[in-house]
Each structure stands twice: as C-alpha cells, then as structure tokens.
Image 1 (cartoon, rainbow, N blue to C red):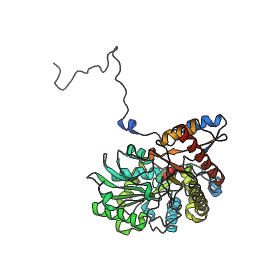
Image 2: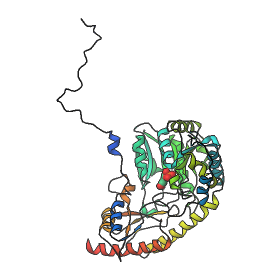
Image 3: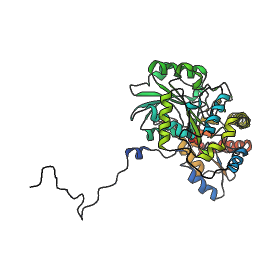
Length: 418
Ligand SMILES: Cc1ncc(COP(=O)(O)O)c(C=O)c1O
C-alpha cells in the first residue's frame, strides 16, 4: 500500500477538455490608456487628407534641446556601455545637487536618487509610502498619468475638487481635511500645476504642510515645472523644514531643459528611510541610462542659462493665449501663473464630443485644432465635462492662429448642435 503522503497525481487536463481561459490581472483592466492620445490617430488621418492640424493637446515642448547635450554625448569616450550605479552616476548626483542649490534647496548627494524621468520618481514615492489599497489625496483636475502610476502601485487616488472660478487654487484646510481617511498616506500635488498652470501660494502649500503634520502624512511634491513660474513663487516642499521627514521632492529635467527623451528625473528627500527604499527600488531596475545621465550634467550644473530663455518663451505664449481667449465668446478662463497649460471652460455640453468633431469633421480654411478634453484630468465621473486643456506648444503665430480657429469652430458648433 502506498504511504499516506503519496498522493496520486491527477492529470491537469485530459486530452479533450479545453485549457483554462487565460486571465490578466485586475490591474491590467484598470490601467487607463492615455486619454490625451486617443484623438491623435484621427489627427494623423486628417493630416493625410491635407488638413493642417494645430496640436494644442500635448505637453511635448517644441523648442530645441540645448546643443551641449548632443556635444556631450559625442565627446563621451567609453569602451563599455555599462550599468550605472542604481542611485545615479556620481557626476549626475553632483549635478543634481548643484541644480537644487541654484533653486535654494540644500540637500546632500546621499539624499538624491536619479530616476528614469519624474515618472519613475513618482512611482517609487508611491510604492515607498503606500501599501496596496492605501490612499493619496490629489487635487482635481490633476496630471492624468497619476492614475496610471496609482494603478501600477495599487494606490487609490482621492481627488479633492478644485474650481475654475478660483483659478484652481486650493480650498481651505477644513475642505481638504474631509478627504483624509484611515488609509490616507499623503498628498500628491504638482506645483506649478499640470493641467491648470496654477502656482500655489506659500499659505496654500503651508495648509498642506500643517495637515500633513497633524495627521502624520507624506507630502509628495511634483515640481517638474518649477522654472515656469510667471506670477508669484513656486514654493518647494523642501523649503518647509518642519516637514523635513515627510517631504518627498519629485523632479525632472524633461520640460525645463527640453530633454523629454533623455528620461532623467530625481527623487529627493531628507528622510533617509525614503531614500533608502527608493534606492532599493532602483537596485531592482538596476540603473538609469548612463549616456543620458552624462549628457545632462552641463545643464543641471549651470541651469539658469538654459531654463531662462525657455521659461521666457513660455511666458510670452501664456500672455498671448490669455489675451486671445478674451476674444472668444462664452469661454471661462483665468490667468495661469505657471507651467504651460490652461484649463478653459467652453460653451459646449460635452468637450469630448466637441474635440472629436473638431478633429474628425471641422476645418476652417483647411485647418483645425486638436484639444485635450479635460475629463481625462478628473477622477470624479461627470466633472470637467465642458472643459479642455490647452498646451502652449506652438510658436506665437501658430498659437494665435489656432485660437482663431477655435473661435470660428465654437460658432459653427453652436449653430450645428444648438
Ligand atoms: C506634472 C508632471 N509630472 C511628471 C511628469 C513626468 O515627466 P517625465 O517622466 O518626463 O520626467 C510630467 C510629464 O508631463 C508632468 O506633467
């Protein structure tokens, strides 16, 4: 007789039965496709038909990358393209420290982890402070990829609604506090903000700082648009010493230097445990691209000469958009204090329908515009239905022309779908 521990193996499948159906994770189903790109394919189709499309939809800067980046790459003399240290090459760490010093932020090189863009810094921070199902408070409308990062990290985003009437500034401490639950681990906010261009005052950031202290929360501060501040000051979370242990700075070179494809960002914190954790996440993905880390050293080491002209150009564009919006009837808007975006309210019921109609059917003298419907920046269903985000990624002339087309299109649309 066979001993009891020996169990006869059952065949997993018989020759005739169907194999069990394959199933992807719930996460796979929840992961959103970029709402900003969904109309892009239609735009390409339209271009093939000879229609000129002005892209007001995406945040890919159109200005040239500083030549020193390519010169540095050409001058690199390395026998082997090896892995970089997981926290970043020493030159990049030193350059990030110099850059932050220029911004008035004093940190040790040990407090910096070089990441694959700001995107990886955000994911690392989420994973460091949240367990599955924990919550982060965000301010709605918010950068749409926070949704994707939260899905990857199994984090729940709790959106606090902001209002166009106040230029999307933060509400009172009491109004924010209502969103704190037992599962809340921190605030994730972007200052200056994508998609609204809002720059929070010191008092507003101070409100988050006080709430974080009262409730023991982390402050995940996305400051990738720091230099694009036209009104007031973008107060870094690192300028609040009372939350040194709670503050996590999420940063990126992408926008301020026009180097989106380099994929270099950083996570910075005075909290050694946070940095150690991010370092361990970094070890798991081995390293960030070595060549690009070298290439950006000159930019980070001496930033103002590069960021100054870029920010000045975007300020001109912001002013132009603000002036030209005054010529479009029925549009709700405010003056964005920073970044290179604005969310505007349109005199339409459904901006998704309007944006699709613009790109599928409409043309004004053989031209049309591509907009980003704002629903993609909201987590609460039904919010932002009549809003769109405009990104200022065109030169002044093209930007002006695209706003004329928008004005004409709104007129035609209101007659057609009244
Ligand atoms: C608010 C905000 N945070 C982070 C990022 C991530 O940028 P990257 O991964 O290129 O550094 C972006 C990019 O658009 C952004 O708008």
